[in-house]
Length: 398
Image 1 (cartoon, helix red, strand yellow):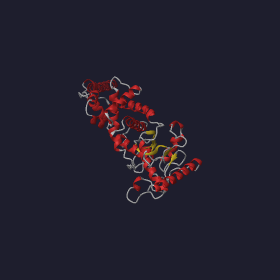
Image 2 (spheres, helix red, strand yellow; image 1 turned 60 degrees about the horizontal axis):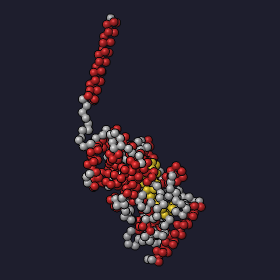
Image 3 (cartoon, helix red, strand yellow; image 1 turned 90 degrees about the horizontal axis):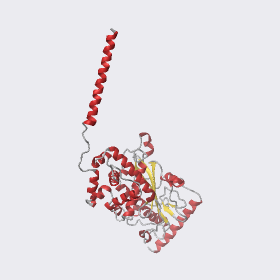
C-alpha cells in the first residue's frame, strides 16, 4: 500500500514539474520568440536629429533651449575635450539632444526612448554620461575671471565709481529636490515644498562664477555660505584685497563681502513710485546696492526659465540631483559666452527687473551670522564712508 502511495506522489510531482516547464517555455516563446517590437518608427533618433538640424531655427531653439549653432558648438567642444564620445548606438549629437530635451522640458525618459527609438536603459545610460561630461566642462566655465567691469556698469553714474571694486554678486536660491520620505523634513522650505538650497556667485555679465548645490532646503544662506568659503575643496573664488562681492543682509559683513544696511528700505519695489526716492545716505546706498545685486536674481530667473527640470525634479537618485543643477549652470554660461543676443537672456536683461524667489531665504533672517572681528568692523566702516560720499554726490546733482 505504501508503495502505491509513493508511486502516486512521485507521479504528481513529475506532472507538476512538467506543467511548470511548459509555462516557462510559453513565457520564453512569448517574450523572445514571438516578441512584438516596441519601437518601430521609421524616424530613428539619428534621423530625427538630422531632420531637426536641417529644419527651422525656431524649432531647434524650442526643443534644445539654445540656438542651432550653439548646439553644434557644444557638441564640438565636448568631442574635442573628449568629455563625450560617439558610441556604436548613439552619437554625441543624439546623446546631447536627449539630455537637453529632458532638462529643458522636464519630460520622462520613456517619452525620450520612444522619440529617439532607444531602450530605457540606453537613454538613462547616455543621460548619465552626458551629465558627467557637462559637469566636467563646468570646471572650466564656472570660474572667476579677471575681466573688467562691463560698459553698462562703468558708464552708469549710479554704479561707477562707487562700486568699481565689486567683482560680482552672491545669493542663494531654492531648486526642486526629490528625497526619501525620512529626509523630507530637512528639505522642506517655508511653503512645504521639498527643495535644495543652492548658493551661487555671478559676475555682471550674468555668468555664474561659483555654484554650490545639494544643501537641504531648510539650511540658511549664511550657513551654506560659511561652509562654501571655509572648505578649501570647494575652491570658492575669494576676492583679492580691496575687492568684494555684494550680498544681501542675510550674509555676514566681513572683508570681501558687502551687505546692505539693516533696518532700511532695500528692495527695488520699495523705491518705485512718486515720492519714494531715497531719503538719506543709507537708503541711497541700499537702493543702488539692491539694483546692482539684482544681477544674481536675473541669473536665477533665466536659469529656471530655460531648464524646467529645476522647478520639479524627477525622482532621480539624490547624488544625481546636485549635478543636474551644476550642468544647467554650465550650459547657462556656455550659451552666455557664445551668444550675447540669446532670446532668454535678452528677456531677463532689464536692468532693474525685480525677481521674486518665494522659497529663497529672506534678507532679514534671524539666523544670519554677525561677525564682530576686525575684518567685519573694517568692512562696515568702508560701507559707512561709501554711503556718505555717495549721498553727498547725489545731493549735489539732484
